Length: 126
Image (cartoon, rainbow, N blue to C red; front, side, top):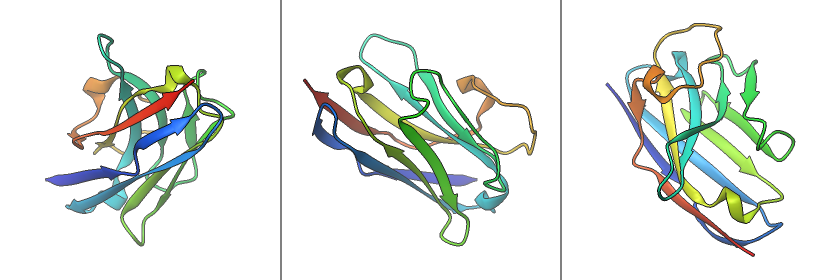
């Protein structure tokens, strides 16, 4: 089992920045590919970004490319999402997730991830 805990959400004005963290514990989470998803009210959970277990490969949704940066520090069992130039449409609950496979395939569907955090709210005001 892997436990994931997100933090760093909050209220920010449009154009501002936030950094989300996802702390992992339990089984060797440093061996897992990981990702960020988000879910706005009334909408399905959508893929935001993914990082390989090595940290060497990253992949982003088109809607956040160039504004968000995913990273990880395996010595701290922590993954990050740096969010810059935030827009009101980025408002959502953000979830981190772990994919226990070590596939190089760029998994973007929520069902492909095995462990989830409880989520952290990000609200961007206009």
